[in-house]
Each structure stands twice: as C-alpha cells, then as structure tokens.
Length: 116
Ligand SMILES: [Zn+2]
Image (cartoon, rainbow, N blue to C red; front, side, top):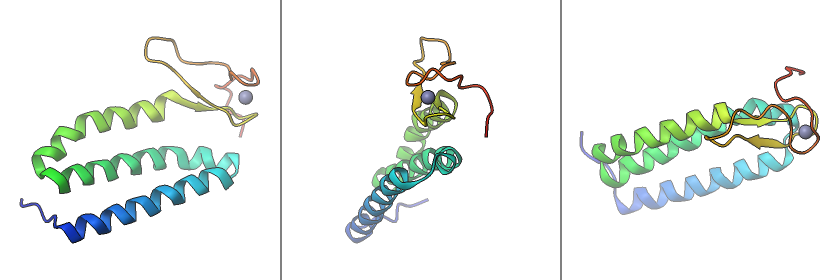
C-alpha cells in the first residue's frame, strides 16, 4: 500500500485534527458528568486512531504498525485505568505500580459503585 500523503493533505489533516481537538476540549468543559462518562472511552479511542492515522500518513505502513502497539496500550490503559467519580466528577488515575483506585481522591466516594 502506498502512502497518499502530500503537503496539502497534511495541512488539511492538521487543521481538522486541531479543530477536533479544540472541539473535544470545549465539549469536555461543557458536558454533563453523564455525557463525560459516556464519551470518555470513545474520545480516548478516537484520539488514538487519529494518532495512528498521522503515523500512517507521515511514514507509511511501517509507521502505522510501529505506532499501533503503544497507542493500543495507551487506549486500553486510559479506558481501564481512568475512573471518574460518580459523585463529584473528579477523574482518578491509577498508577501502574499501584492497585486500582477504589475511592475518589477528591470527595472520598467509592468509585466502583455503579450509581448512575
Ligand atoms: Zn469524588
């Protein structure tokens, strides 16, 4: 498969990516807690796909597969590791070397309770 990247295509993709990124930031600021919890895995996955697309366009198929593994790991970690508190909305991130966070660091509410 050949790379279809050209300077024009790269500029367009960069502009689109920037617009999407700003849009996501604005959405994140305005969205309700429920919407954030729903959108988070999709947003993380989408960001990973965009990174992969960039790698592909920049260096071709080799770059795609080179970026695929770390991106897949980052997506998986973000979805499984990031927990958003159902009470106050604070996102708690678990470090790899520590056990999974069970209580919100902000309000102390239990994170595993599936309230809502
Ligand atoms: Zn909390």
